[in-house]
Length: 69
Length: 398
Image 1 (cartoon, chains in turn brown, orange):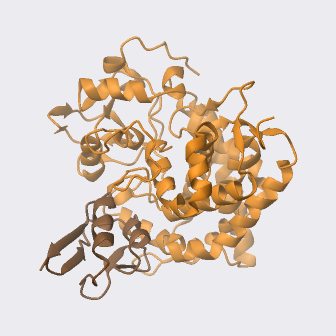
Image 2 (cartoon, each protein chain N blue to C red):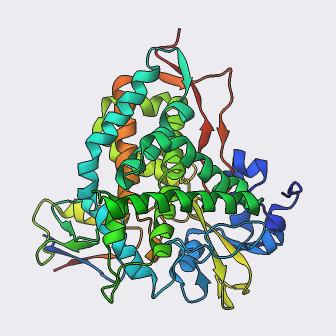
Image 3 (cartoon, each protein chain N blue to C red):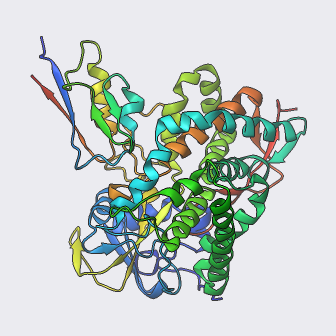
């Protein structure tokens, strides 16, 4: 069985396209400038793995890291 | 005003104002991309064009060798007219952009959505009983112009004037500097009047937000900064989204299968809109080479402009399989329609909301529509590409 996924938004790369927030609102939140951050410590709850990968592959700045723990 | 000679060698002498480029740029971009990741023309006093997604991205990320002080490729290099943050380079760029960003977050756009929905329905009321109409001049054109006027707190009834200025700055102004400078002067005087009014009676709008903004030293912005940002918001907020809404409806009018699928599966609309943004990205930007460098092995020399075509990047088959097909449920779509790097379009959330609402309301009320075979679709030239005449027949085919 695969391990848990964890996501992280690289703050130097994120430019606020907000694609992740639109594709996976459970996993990302936006600050007052519209830049994205992972919710909590970035642990992806079971069942939302596909959304994590979807957000990662649609980020135009390649700012989202997904790692398996 | 100068007329350009027709292009006979796209790879060494490209011209994005050539009528064939305006009509159908996609095969031209394929030819350029096959030739080199960066091409050059002597036109426009010297201009490069990166042709691949990767080369476009490298230029967009490299603020050390490429300046944003001029963001339109023109026949001449007019004096720099600051419109922060789009014309700003680091370190001025970030603080100028941060003044605007909070007004354009997705949450801020949600509050604006009911007004946009009302605008769309008022417009549709105006032609729904007709057998056909020009969708560009009766629908797509008015949604962004009235929305940005609403945000800025200026009369929506001044729309025709705004559209005239934009045409003069972004289209006619490529080849005629006098027309462009005159439009800039008129816009500046217009906004200066609105600023004076608000000094006496403050209002709750974007003009007031900018007037109340403070720089990092706690001082109010200089008038030249406020006026520059206001010109930018008006220019950038109008024919861009007009083009994106128009191109989306143009696609749906000529592609019944996609139209029927969206009617049956409305939840697919956000994904479809990203694909319309990729395939028909309206906005091409520019940079100016300030220090010699090379991109993808191609030398780039100072003094030249760079035509930064995000639309061409979005058609690179190395990044987007079947790049020339419009796939409305495309899963992997990290397109660059709103730019890449620090200059990501400040209004991207606004544009997406307007597109979403405009297409949604249209499909609800006009599920059947098609291009009028008796009339011609025409496209704008140069920096922003979209349908400027979009004749359609409405209702079931008779």
